[in-house]
Length: 156
Image (cartoon, rainbow, N blue to C red):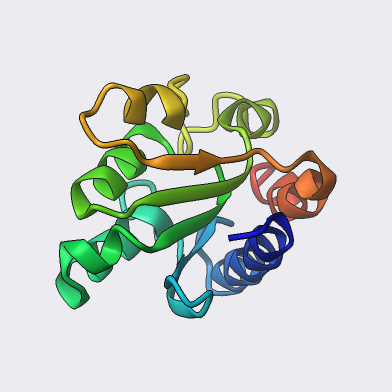
């Protein structure tokens, strides 16, 4: 997957995140991209426990065999938390692309009770496992665009 393709998919995930907000959910979005660069499924955030990446990885694990998922990419607007990263790992998704780091989100959310962030990078979580999952991110050139839905949301 080229950098331009990653950026395009990050923008698609951001559209999913914006749609999640319209429906009263947290502004996170994720897409699953197949080896042919097509979006196979997408998922917005639901709530504090049902994160976009977790729900997407679980749905993907039911819909596709592990060998196929190893050739796929989970694209997320923000760096997945430890729970989401672990679910991606167990679902056998072979690549992660994320737009902004968890630390950037923490700057916006502070101690918001609906987003008690964990300071544990996805690279650290994945580096603790036995599988060599490819990780790409952050993408500073579109960080502002991806963080935009969060700026007002967490002030509520």
